[in-house]
Image (cartoon, rainbow, N blue to C red; front, side, top):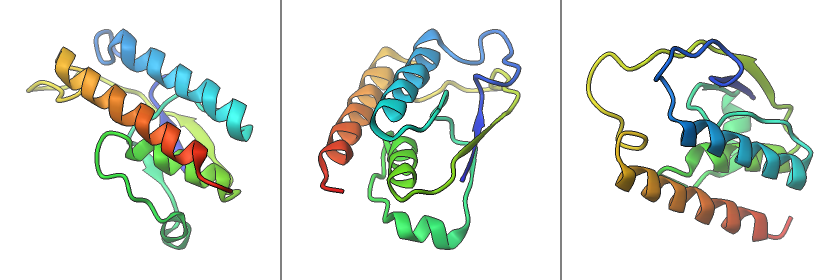
Length: 123
């Protein structure tokens, strides 16, 4: 599985909020602690073979899906590679997640619940 890391690439000023960057590092710390996998971002840029994706049996349909994918891939022993991707401010509109306090709180809650649910599943 390949993940495009917005943190490792060139980021245009204002393209990511401080809490997006912080959350990526915190999740990265927990993934390393739990599974020995290095990660800097939960960004949406991903590539994975179809057969590998189907084996992960993903269930999360809200903000926690990137974390679920990374955790299940690590548990399944998939090789996970991060590559830098450049990231720019959005051209129009406002992010549903990072654009509002409510969106950020909702996303953080789902991400933490996803983390707890998967971490407590038997291996």
